[in-house]
Length: 294
Image 1 (cartoon, rainbow, N blue to C red):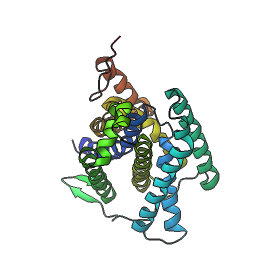
Image 2: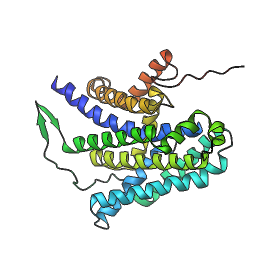
Image 3: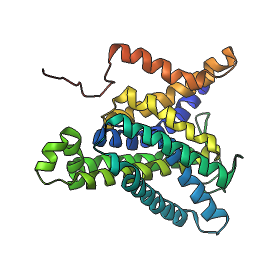
């Protein structure tokens, strides 16, 4: 039972980070109907910038974090302005192909600048483990979980009550109707890509503090796909719930099944579960059912 609870706690923490990263994925899909396949590269660029600021320039972590978030927001704006906006009226597949090219470009830049080796963040959070009824929890897990929950709460309130959130929901529901009401679709697209880049950077920094930082961490872009498909591609709540579900399933599969099959199932398990669930609920747990009238 202790081992199960240990795996469960780890899954909840990692799953919360998945949910945060998936949030940006869902926002871009709601706004444009396209999948951002460069999401994994957004996740790793921010942590590398933050690590350089801390180690090379001796900037305190929280100031480096703030600078990194500003950089990530600018990166999201630049990508939206130079890559996405010129093709926003093109077929959705064109936008998806553009994000694939962007993924290759950003991934290659990371390899050229920072190399392939794993880098570790300096000890930012307390290192003394916390023992709760035999369950050993690292403080970095608790801090990461608390930060993610705070950010998710802020974003949920922002989407529900702020003018920007209302505009984003309006564009997601009907872009033409939103434009006729005076809502700037360009502004919504820019805000969407900015938020997506920022939450990806935060998720990457938290994962970097937990597992170390390397270019292979961009694989989270693929891991997030089952999250958003499970929760529903257009559902913010689904992204959060899906993140927790996938994070827990991954860790339980890694803890119990991987030793029996020689490893590797941890990475595949989310896709298997999503495939089974979509056979019953094709639009995900919280996705909106599309109805076309002819």
